[in-house]
Image (cartoon, rainbow, N blue to C red; front, top):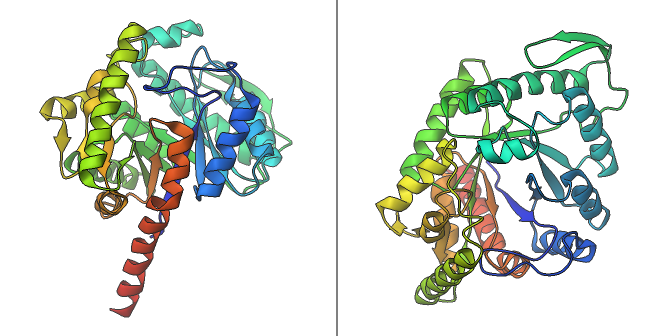
Length: 361
């Protein structure tokens, strides 16, 4: 089992510890950020989705124009673009990026944010819509002939997409900790995405999702997200973590915790907050300091230590069957560069050494 590293890019410099600066859509920053990930050895980068931010399709297209090998994971929320049109947009973008695209379907974990874009469905309805959306999306991407669809959320007559992805199959990522999320993922996802939970919780999720997918004779891969905090010594890394916590606390307070609002509909957020309430430091190197500040609202758990310690911590998740890791830092661009110097190559070396040892045995 190989290992993959995903990063995440934004459209301007900003984080929990760095106040937003520059234009909202900073073309030069997007290009530099994407190139930094490619040069650091990342396999793919996530382009996120927010109800008030620049369009991810165009951010991805611009980033792809300034890279050659790096792949992309575009977050997309069903409900605002019909699946037939979304299929053509995704297929076009995949051709534009020379087959480097995957899509991450997000059903939405906050009623209030969904309503900013005019979506008034409740959580259960959103997952039911995602299920139907993916059914129609896949049919448009794969069908060689026109088709009809009559469903609860979408209807189409003689739908057809002349443009197909350059890839034989456009990878679909899907996340969520609720029963509804796991049910949809088990039928549609190629990769199930987890936030950075303690090992026991992650193992439980992997087991549950695998069992759900097996009922449909499917196999799913897994991705998990962390915010690594590196130091030349463990002491230095933990000191940096405390600096990040205090800086983030001040910045979040100054913004009235706009990014730290709870997401009551998100089971994933509830699980992260429950982990944070167990303590700051879990397992060997998992740190929940920022997760608690933001009420578990997004992928905010960190792994803290030296590159060697963090790579060992990642391999503990790898042993659970998770072969893909989304890592991003609190100093986004500089941390991406830093990860490429030692953490990524060291972790890959350890995985390769395991494969050699297994073949010898």
